[in-house]
Length: 297
Image 1 (cartoon, rainbow, N blue to C red):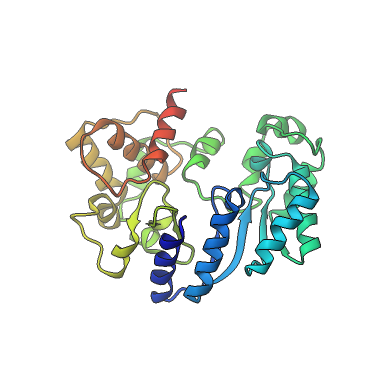
Image 2: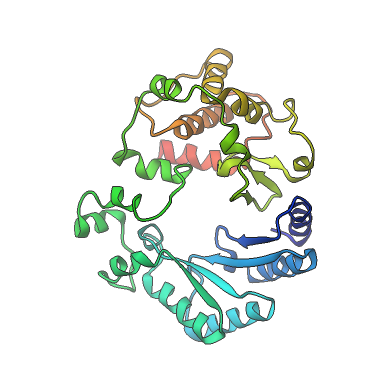
């Protein structure tokens, strides 16, 4: 996120009553100078940074990591959330994670291990290598993936839909609609935990692929500018489904879905790739482009 966007967003956040944030990604430490600018913008805006998240992919050696964290410590960083999970270990060796934790100790930065309950699992394998989820299942049992849902909270949206669909109960589109007759206003208006993306968009309800421009948050959300979001608030997945079928020729591509978010994501992906409608609330486009590549890979 560039400094101006960060400062503008932080100003809006603070004006609406939020006094502290965390910085995530992606991976914030891949662009150290940008992260420093965001920390400085937060200080100018009077918003505290509770922690910065990292997946440790940037770690090379303890000396370099210590220099990087020392720089961030001087800019006000007090706590680093270090991601620890089988999902991260698919791409990042556990040795990098432990290296970052050691560097935090050297620079007097608190470590928020998320989730330290997985340390025991990851310690069963070669720390200098990555390991697939299939490797974890072979070691800990075929129900390992399902058991993860009981160990920490996972928002079943985005990539998690594809990851957990094989181990969760799938219901037809009609069953999903019948089980969810009301609107999604409670979820979409919940601000107990909210996200802004690097483009300056507010992500309602943690719904990846939906975007409300930050400046629109200080006024009632326009039905004209945000037809899909306002429809979901009032009519829920039933209204979304009926619109997509009647107006755009949508039909379910799969026989089963985990939940209404799973069906909603497929509908939105269909709208982006199969209509000429200008739907700026469906952002960033990369979210849908990447899903298309995944579906047809």
